[in-house]
Image (cartoon, rainbow, N blue to C red; front, side, top):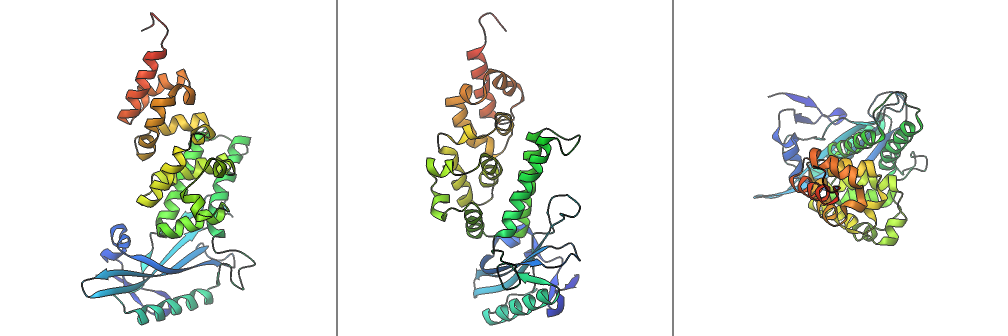
Length: 310
């Protein structure tokens, strides 16, 4: 079994430990966490998050400390890249006092390496969720560059939007944020109350830029958390939501095979012609991957086909 060192705290972690798999991480709940940002240009790991995590066992409550990193590669012009799902800093379960001591030691180590707590004295006025705002903003800026033609030869904007969603979703997954923390962060950067995010209204929708909606809807609807998927469904249920989405991007969503296509299928049945138009529906009758979406598009195509045309 291989081991690595957990920094200056001198804590061993198992590189082959089943806790450090996606399934193992999911069994722990974050009770408190701190996000830090690197204050100098040396080193690729721009962001770090260190969290106190707990899980219930047959012997009572177990504790550990999880650390995750994310890369900010603005100097190269590429997207931020998550550097892992996160890693437990102890190879064994800890008592609460031990975990608190380990958390404090790891924070001191990171600060010695040049990290500062976001929103703290060294944070230059930044808030605790500004790193998430940076991730979202960078995706939108990249999309704008391609729409203006600044990026040279590239995929169409719908492909760029899809890639941006995938990049954001992967970064969030690998940082290992709990759903409640992610809801708090998204509500903060959207300048909404958490209740407004959870229970959106037509007025809330009007306050949200369409580009943000196009970025966040897939993240919500395709998330592993039931809570986040439910939020996505509530936003999608608003009558005007789908009409805020670019038609070409909406066609791409409907043509997929995952939860997003399934969530859109009922709207397609009721409003397919108004949403996409006859040409897009004819294409989807051949290309849609989700069975319900394909069947619905086929019915719309047959219904709108000119008489005598096969």
